[in-house]
Structures are given as structure tokens and as C-alpha cells.
Length: 150
Image 1 (cartoon, rainbow, N blue to C red):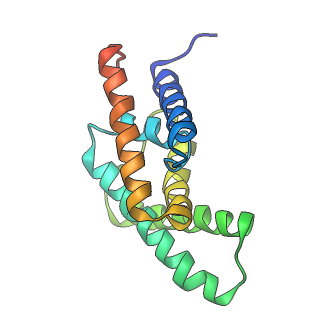
Image 2 (cartoon, rainbow, N blue to C red; image 1 turned 45 degrees about the vertical axis):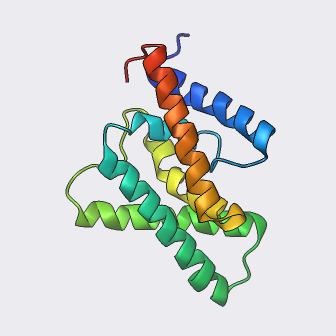
């Protein structure tokens, strides 16, 4: 079995994220997120919409859903993922272009905004976006240095 270029980029993102988390204690919105976003760097509209959906998801769950039901732990995480998927579906209906589709990674792509929203809830928007952005850039830098075709 051979790793594809997509697998390699995701793996790089996971390794860098793990190292960053171990050194700093700051979580970059899930281990797979920086690698996935590095694959989208040439589609800035995709990254913008991913971050927008994550912010909207955080707001809807924190200030809407959590007011009508008790959310904590896995229930809150499941709510974040579910709301993010519904928002993505609605946006795909309203916007005619594909914004978060990377061949072979559609399943990962639909959970990325939920992972971001969940991390925003835990450590704040600024810390989450800065750490995720930094690790996305580092992952992409490694892709360029290693001359991986994406």
C-alpha cells in the first residue's frame, strides 16, 4: 500500500499538530485540520467559508441550541458537527461552486468546521484561528520544501 500525496499532506499536518500541541498545550482545532486546510490553500474562498461556517456553528450551538437543551462533552461535540454539516449543506444549495471538496477527502471536509467550532468553544476564537493558521502554513511550507504535488 502506497501513500498518496493527499495522505502525505494530512500526515504532515497531524505530526506538526501533535508536536505543536505537546510543546505549547494549544490545540489547533483537531489534528487533521491543518493538513486539510493546507490542501485548500489555493482556494481561499474555501478556507474563508470553512472558517465562516465554524464561527456560525459556534454561535448557533453556544447561544441557540444550548439554551433549549443541556449540552456538554460528547453531546456538545455532536451538536457542533451536526450544525456545521447542516450549514454546509445550506451554503452548497445557495452557492453554486464547490468550496470544500478535495478529492478523496469529502468525509473529512464536512467535519472540519465542526472541529473548528468545538475548539473555539474550548479555547477561544483567536487562539484557535491563530494556531490553526500557523500550522496550516507550516504544513504547506513542508509540502513546498518536500515538493509534494497537491
